[in-house]
Image 1: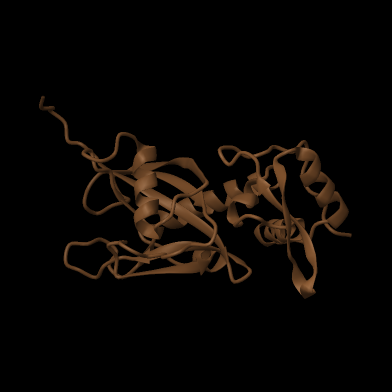
Image 2: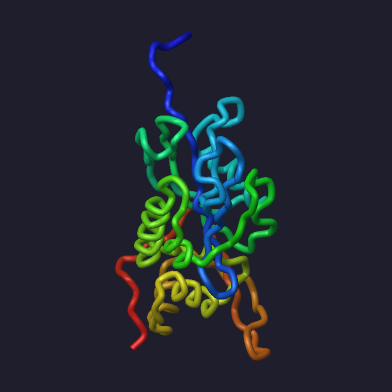
Length: 232
């Protein structure tokens, strides 16, 4: 069946977050410097056009793009929102559907990106860059959503490989939130929430051992009744 109206360009962009070198980082790709490509050489979020032959849904497209860019499947993928207008892409009226993913221990970031380069960049540095399209706006929205949810959910656990210790988990929270948390209150919050299960003793810092934990259900996150206490 044919239609009498032009169809917009439809893409999916994925904001892929990971904890690397003691910092929260995001995977960015550099746009190819080729004739006809918009924003040549500019850093951008990984993503691409919806493939109607491969993608049954926007979520399927996001999962495919994540696998192509990192070689891993994420334990957490959430739709962030949609952006679209006649100006965001010089090739025509364009709409993109953004997802954000949390992954642990990225294995081969940047593989099969279809871009000239790919790099894990600290989120605050990435936020200062002049990204392609409207990706700076999308990144700002993702960071606001992520940091807001971290205040009252167990999302940071998806950034860790299992088993992990409670001090390791607290450190991830502090990195994402950018502030120290009260140790005893944090420990009580995590254990009372019922989303962790013991996984045996693991090696900790300074040659000590500590109880390791894993997430009981990686299909969802725990919700806490209040935000975290800052360390006095």
